[in-house]
Length: 375
Length: 216
Image (cartoon, rainbow over all chains, first blue to last red; front, side, top):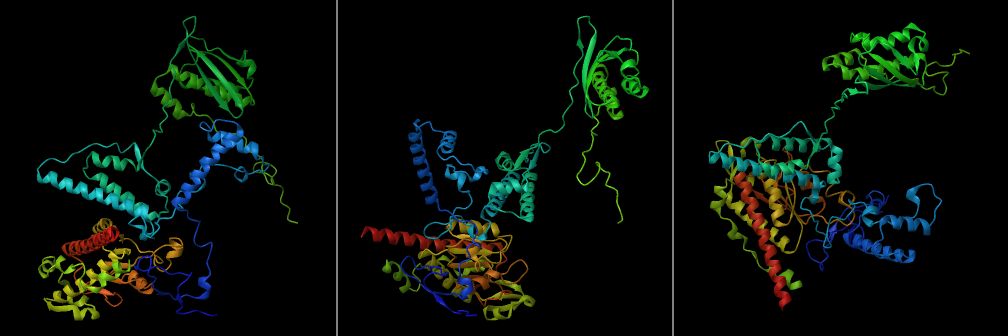
């Protein structure tokens, strides 16, 4: 193992210009071995592009777009990206399956990812003053936020010095949440650790708890997101009146594969018709008829309503369950909110989520396994 | 071009950094206060004036000389357009140091030091990165009261260092140590002000000389 210890490097290898300007090239003694000098192509990460390179690519793209428009016989000024895609698909037909593998002509900002831009100028000086920390955007964000904190504290001190009361503004805390770690990473284009994220959120919370004015709200809003109200208030439809002046309302219900729609009329005698047939004939089994009557029995309105329903799909029991749900939903309009709540707690208004479980391969049924034979 | 670079080297104090500070300024900023006798580092004994009620007092005459050398060196580096990196791991002064660096147009690192920043730079940043030409330590210890890793790394990468060393620090690997207090806010503000003024002065002088050259 020939280790070239103390090799003085001039050309190639790793050496950096001292502060001698463009002319003077001072030597730097760097201890390396021959193995290390071989360039490890993969380890340096994806290729980085300079700004000049990206600009040139954009110019070439625009020029190519105009050429393509001329070729296709269309107006270069109004040639959109969709037209480009169509033209390329026409001129270079490809039978490849993967859409990403087919020839494409897109704007360079879509092809070259944003983050792989070289962060220093021609003379080698980095652009950002926190470049040497490694996580420049995150630390510059922390720096900015801390500066805001200091300015707010100074403002507070001034107010107390002038004996003015601190501003107390009510901020809507319930409707917003902080950005998640992934969203923050996307914003900064840098990887963060959990600790870093926590620190940043703690700093923001500290800033928020101070009696700060409008100046900081805009800054904090950049890192908050609105939480949409997840409560879906179920709207109970009002009663409708038909030609005779009788109040009625409709409801829909599902159970297994059966679908049912029910129309419940007021001032009735308790007559129930299913698909044009009376329930005694349609549901010969007592259990099904009990299911249909349960909502009315629960609300003590057994003989007071008429019902006409249509049902399809499923079996005997499923159809009964579907009609029950449909009638319960229809009855909501006739009844007070408290009773609606009682119905909900009784389970009359919930769609039964149980459906037939699929059969799995290697088993005889959904759960039943094949007979186990010892030998 | 050569004349531009060689002319400052002929004067002992080309940028006149002596006038930036005086002994009284250092005393008012409490630069002479060190730590207690028990915290004293063996290699700091030459720089200590004495010990009063168990607290070490740093010799300000020596500090003056060292500070003048350090500021002169910094100004020369800035004149030759070198990259200067400010390092301080004190949480109290992190914001101050970063703002100082930003105002000078130089760079700062007051956060957690990742292992290979200097020694593994070509892999961490990308090939063709330029390393700093001078590192200024405004506090040479890290949060666990051990010498900062960057001192050793800079020595490995042949990067000259300027550092404010307190009585509990090891001044060994630092090229231009400046014995002084690194705990008081006044002292830190004074150092930041001095370095900032030196760098800005050097950069202005460089711009002026370039303009004169172009006019000729």
